[in-house]
Length: 315
Image (cartoon, rainbow, N blue to C red; front, side):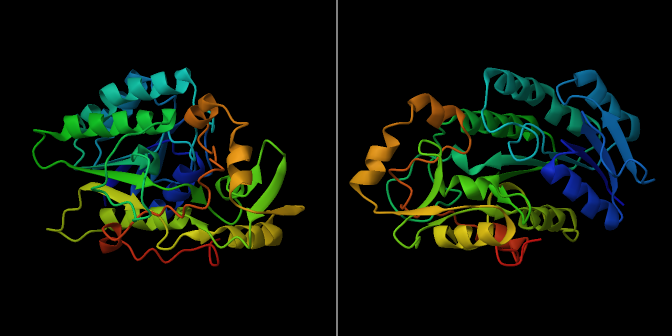
C-alpha cells in the first residue's frame, strides 16, 4: 500500500484525512507541531516539527521513502490564522523552496497541494469561475498560495512521471466547523448577523468531506489513469445565505439576525472597512458585492469524485 506524507497532519483537514487514509490501509507519515489521535496506529508515523524545518521534514521523507506528498500546511483552514501576516508568508515561502523537490527525491510519484479560490482575478461577470479563468490574486493569502502553486509546477517540470495536482479549494465547513459560513452572514462593523432581503443569494464553499473524497479518489485511481493539473474543489451548488442562517440556528448559537435592504446600504456598510483588512483577512466579506452570486465550476473535479456532501448532510 502507498505511503502518504502529510504536512499539517494535525489540523482540521489533516487529522480527518489521516483517519480516512489509515482506515483504507494506507501508511501515513504526518508532520505537525502538535500530535494527534493517530499516534498509536502502527501504520502512522508522526514527526513533531514545524513544516519549515527542512532537516526534520526531508529527513522523515528520506528515512522511509514516500509515494505521495499531500501539502496541507500553510493552509488557513488547517493551521494558519485567518489574518495572514508577513511571518506566515515567509514561512510558506521557505517551505516552497524545498518540500516539492524533497518529495520527488524521496520517491513520490504524486504531489497534491492545497491552494485557494482566492488565486483568481476579481470577477466582472456572474459566469462560473473555471480553472481556465484569469489568475490575479489580490489577497495576501491568494498571493501566498499562488506562489506555492508556481513552486510545485517548477519542481515537477523535468521530473519524469511525477504528477502534480493543485486543488483550489473554496472555504471549508463541517457540521461543527462553521467560521467560514458565519463570516458570510456577519457584519463585524456592526457586530451582528444579517441577511439582505430573504437571503436568496449564495456563496461557494467546500464540505471537508468532499475535499477528502477528492484526494482519496486521486490516490485510488486505477493504473493508467493519471490525474494532474489544477482543479476547483467545492460543493456542486452554492449555499444560500438563508441556508446558512438555518444551519447555524440548528447547530450553533446565532442570536438575532437583521434583515437589510441591499443597495446603497451595502455600499455604505462596506466603507467602514480598510483596504488592508480586505488584503490580509482570509474571511473578509465585501458587503458591496455580497449578493453577486460568484460561483466556482467543479466539473473537472467531478471526474474524480461525486461531491456527494452538502450542508444538509455534512457531519
